[in-house]
Image (cartoon, rainbow, N blue to C red):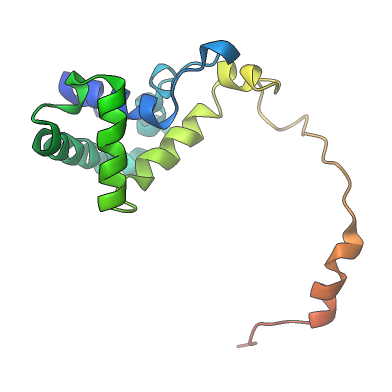
Length: 148
């Protein structure tokens, strides 16, 4: 599935509002890590919904700003998206979730946040041992479900 140029520009603006670039930490913005390719490859069942979200965003931005989201500066785009999120809670959750899923798997991002850019398996990650006595109240409570 391909995006039109307008949809791609809208997507890039939205992605960088979700996760902006961080030059001081040498981290790219979300528009630079291939979110659309990730969606098409690994979440293809959600791609059509993302395209609908982009079309909805363009229509809403045109109504609020008098122009497309891709043609305004970052501050106005961010303000517009904030207003839309307040007015339509949950409407952009899919795109935010997919963006974060893609972003925090990208090698440059993993290295930038101090993690080794590799799959978690087969090497695994060290998990600090916890205090399992904290689970005692839960164990003492017993099952809280109904057997069927």
